[in-house]
Image 1: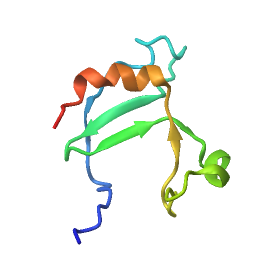
Image 2: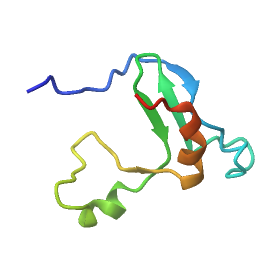
Image 3: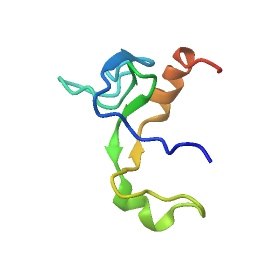
Length: 89
């Protein structure tokens, strides 16, 4: 069995994946949420609405949100705009 993945809190933001919420017309003012970023270690940071509590009682079988994790929702438009920046392998 492989080593358990753990997030590296020292990783830095490297580049936005996709377009900003402003470019997609999903926000106004100085707000920049939701967003997707690649970190300098290759991991991905997702900024969205924390709906862990709303979904905890209706997760599919075999799916769990462990302590220290949150279920984050982003708009479909955000992930589709990121597709061009995500490699196939």
